[in-house]
Structure formats: structure tokens, C-alpha cells
Length: 292
Image: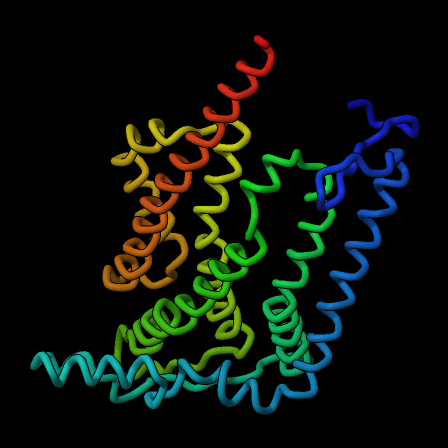
């Protein structure tokens, strides 16, 4: 499709009937408004997060830095039940500091932006999907039904997994690691927030693997046979991804990330197989119709 003003894009409505044709410029205008509404939603939730930062900072951001955090309490219960008392987290050997004049202000601004993005994500993706969906064929619309729900669900599951599982293990390892007892751990607040947000958002993104495989299968880049054939290679790649996501070198954190990634890979194979079957049925139907 040539990218000029005379280019026309067919849009179908929800019933599958042909809608109004849009020029390329009108298409860009439509995209602009979707982006404006998405950014506006992020800004609204960012402002709300800014004015709620006192509560957010104490209960959410600093949560994994406290021994009373939910994850540490569950670890201790498991340790007591199994006789492995070493799972209990008794101390967090560090203190947070702001070493720059604008440190606390930038921390609050960054945290507000991240919070606004996470909360507004379902709406932002819905806006993107509203822009993409009219250009799909009727069969593609049916095959991708529920895309907003599944993408949002996977994102929230990833965020929760990163916040409650990966981040606490990584933070606990890093803050309690000492070369010598005489060295005090005094971390800048921006560094702490960077580790927490990176781990959390990275898990939110990596949990989109099944949806990414669904799209790649739809466009013909991958097949379920390809995913099954290179499963062993994929496991190595997933271990590398887990090592990159987790800043701590301890094997427990990396395994905790690698296990759900492997399950997501297996789910991706199932998703790819279902989509491939649908494509082959549609191709057979198209061939039968063309032969008539």
C-alpha cells in the first residue's frame, strides 16, 4: 500500500459490512486522536498517583523493603512448615537516601509516571485495538476476540508476579549481600525505585509471550511445529532472559522467573496450534469457494 494522500483504507464495522473508506491522511488523523486519548489517560492517572504518593510510597514502593511484606511472611510460613527456617527474612540491611537536590522530586515524578502507565494500560491498549480492529477481516476479528481482555490479564499477572515474587527475592538478596560487615548499604532512592520498576515492568512485558506468538502465527512467521522443534533452544533463551531480568546473581530468583516463562512458552505452543488450525480451515474453505 503506497503511503500517499490518495491511499485508501477500508474499514469494516462490527457487523462485517464495508464501512467508509479513509484516505491515508484521515487514517493518520484517527491514529493521532487515539494516541492523544491514551496519553491523556496516562496523565490523569499520573496526577492521581502524584497526590496519593504518600500512601503509595509507604505501602507499595517501600513494601518489598520491609520484613513485614506479604512475600516475606509467606516465605517464613513455608520455612516453618518445612523446617527450613532460613527462608525467614529477619532484616533488610540497608537504608535509603536521596543524594541529589532534586532526588525526591524526581523519584515522585518517576513513580507517578510508572503508576499512571500501569493503571492506564488497559485503556491504552483498548485505544490501540480500536485503531487496529477495523482494518481486520471478519475471520481475523473472530479469531482475535477478547484480545484486550487477554492482553490486560497477562500484563496484570506479569506485574503482580514481578512485584510479589521477583522483586522481593532480588531486593532481599542485593540489600543483604555484604563483602565485609564494616561496609554499610546506603542506596539512593532512585536506584531502589529503578530496580523495583524494572523487574515489575519487565515481567509485565514478558508475560505477553502467548499474545506475541499468536500474532506471529497469524502473520506466518512461526508455526507450532517450529516452536516444538526448537523447544530446547527456547529453554536456553528463556534462562538467559530470566538472568537479564533479575539483577541478582542468585539462582533462586532466576529459576523463579524461568519457570513461569517456560509455562508461558508451552501455552504459546497451544495458542499457535489453535491459530494454525483455524488458518488451515479458512484456507481450505477459500480454496473450495474459489473452485466453485
